[in-house]
Image (cartoon, rainbow, N blue to C red):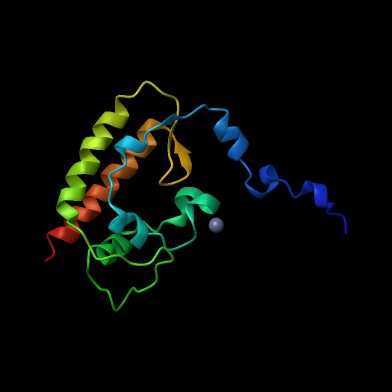
Length: 141
Ligand SMILES: [Zn+2]
């Protein structure tokens, strides 16, 4: 009982969030491709409101599954798997967004899709990594 109830604050449940907010991140929602089929299907670990980017599984296998491959082998998606869209088209959008994010004059960027904050370079790296995996999945048809 050495854990008083008043310690159960939002700050305590989400350590680091306060620090990240103090970076005053620039919202980049308009640069996150509108692809519910991809974001929902890769939401395997938790929900963004709880875990931020850690809610997603962006492994090559997970991206392949979201793109319509290996469906029987990899069925779990907390966000509910959606009918796959066009992985090549999404890869092109992500590469375009990555270029624009890298040019932003900001210490940090945030996206409500992920409920998370990264440096612009880290966000751009993430988009490019996803584009690589989507292109591999798309060309495997
Ligand atoms: Zn969580």
